[in-house]
Length: 311
Image (cartoon, rainbow, N blue to C red; front, side, top):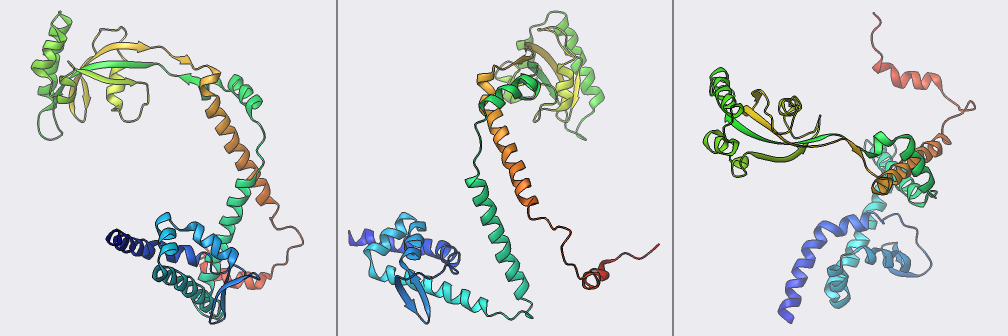
């Protein structure tokens, strides 16, 4: 039991190095309340702050501090050190090159915190009725499933610069002529195809392909969509892998999903749109108005080094 606990302490100390500083520095400017539970060198921690910090620790750290006095003191010390360092940063003079970078990091963190809180507490209305309306008026955007095609192929591998595409196309055309004359496709796959992944499935490229689909060669897709009937073949198709003979195996016609299938996606999109517009409107309330004071000579002076020369 002692060995296990000591091993746990080592693990805890490693976790501390990566986590404790972040947790404590993020709390360095918290206001001090009446119930002081930790104080040194004019730096205090109250009970509310301590409870919050402890709640952020991983369970392993919480258990270590609760069960071992040495680990507890180490963590409390790190908390105070972080607050003391933050106090030192408060004393950076305004004419120091460190002053404004610090101030703007603080400002950006405050801004992010406030806007995250705004979005988190935003009262978003029920979107079901509007989602049904959106489904009816923008059905293509939310519910249309384009035509998809399933294919098999024979690949005559011809990496760029390693073979003659002309000769390979001639070879592919000869095989295509045999197929159109009635040769068995599976047998021709086993005899000629260089695609080991589809060869074990008699050439089946087990992906339903729609026009413009990512992850599939555009030339392959274009060739597949030139075939009119299931079971027919394309002309030889040139891709970066080589020359293909494509067979159209099946077609899923274009169709629309029912409302119930797409309702969650529509509601999610509407909620995101509501948050975006609400955030924009809220930020607009902070825009400057006509009573703003601008020291134009000072602004001009700040911007003058960046002016472009007149033509």
